[in-house]
Length: 449
Figure: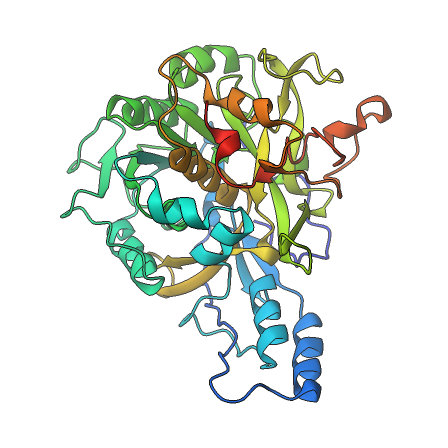
């Protein structure tokens, strides 16, 4: 398990599809996080604001991979998420700059990452989030059970003033990979953190959507794939997958068995280990989602993004698949097979998102990052855009909007070293690139057929 701060090189090789048995995951004790105090009196003086900003800027965020990011059994895949453990997030630093109040010490009582209004504003979704999504179902596919999923989701939505999404009102449903609501997988605290992240991001971007959580028996591709199929069987037109593993020669058969669902927008996180392809992000039938660092700015948009990259072994995934054929809508020439990614959204833990979680940790607010955040965000954008055409592969939709104002082109940063003849596979540039794809959403126009 990597516990290095973001400016320290991590140990290489958090290998996803483990080839040796016997990995055990140590129990972890997690601390909570605070947020900036809100100024309720007169504005702080310029001097106080400057001092608070300086102090906030000097305290870099630190984080650790969530326990499910290290597979505990042979053949299991890993979740793609990190939990902030200390320092100050971009959200806290912005609050300090605006309010002139130094962020309080972490205590898990209030959020310390971006919330729904931040994400909706950053991606031009405020109006759509208010009016669209009713009747649509976003499915979240993860492994193992989160016993507190419904209660934690209720806490998140209540805090941010989102409408209730419960089992009782028909908005939220949790099932096993066979569709059972009573015979659920074994509970797992690491995957519970992942599930809280995924559910909260779907809620943040599409608060009017219904949410279906499908829990696989274990984190093998076979069981996760069956969970994807079950989500589609139960009617979900938007399915988010925030996990991955090393590519293998079996991937093309997995494509046919689990991911070939015309009329369904299936999103998959691109990975968190920097440059290099992983599966199922490499499937030609899915929308592979890369990750960015998202910060406020003085631009007209009010936000700026760059490739998320912490070190040579940590950052958004991208690359050229060794096995999957190139889909017809991809036209880049430096990779003859499937190129990762298609689009992107926030993933850098330092610019992370707020999540409420209570299973296996101190109940409270945490800040998470990783491309596990970006996948459900993009699935929710698809849901806001409306039901896909019945014979469509929605991964193709953003390509029709390439180079338009419907996408925020991310042009700076890289996630590793790749061939100079195909540098776009690991380095952002104008137009399409591997780490961020065609860019990030600016409204929903790029996600409709």
